[in-house]
Every structure is written in C-alpha cells, then in structure tokens.
Image: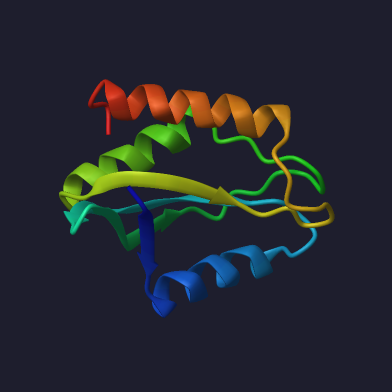
Amino acid sequence: MNSIIKINARILDEIVKHSLIKRNLECGGFLFGNYQTNYGNQIINIEAIYYERLFGTENKFVFSPAYKYRALCYGKSIRSSFIGCYHSHANYPAIFSSVDRKMELYLEFCSKNELT
C-alpha cells in the first residue's frame, strides 16, 4: 500500500509563517485531517493546523503536556483526526533527535488509544 499525503498551500503557508515569527528559535504545531483508502492507497488529507506562539531554544522545542492537550482538544472540537506534528529546526539540519523520537512514540500511543 502506498501513502499519499495531501496538504493544501494554506496549511504550508501557516507552517512557514509560524516558523518565521521568531526565526532563530524552534517552534512546533499539530496537523489534523482524515485518512482514506482509495484503490489500495492510503490517502492522508491534512485539513487543519493548530499552533500557539510558543517557542523553544535555538536547538530544541518540546511540546508541553498542556500544549498537547489543547491541540488534541482542538482536533476533537473540529471533528478531525490527529495526523501528526511539525517543528522547526531553526539552526540545525532536519534530522530526528532523541526528543523527536520520544514525541513520535507518545503520539503513536495516543492515536492507538483514541486519545486524539
């Protein structure tokens, strides 16, 4: 099965806008939408974004439990599924850090346990 991710230009613009508010500090947000299967392909439609004006340091951003909670509540309020999260790497290459891996496991757990 192939996965196809569809994200409209408005969402991409919002991510860029968010990362440029304080371009030397990392930031992050959450993406919501829906999943479909079409001709054996999994289609992921990203339809909404949630972010706050919260920033980390030049090389680290951590989603606080309160931020995660507010984002997941937002997703429920718009009746949209949690798709994933994003964060900037203001001054570093886009590679997974140990913090990134922990967040990935946490969000996978939430999705499997219908916490989103």
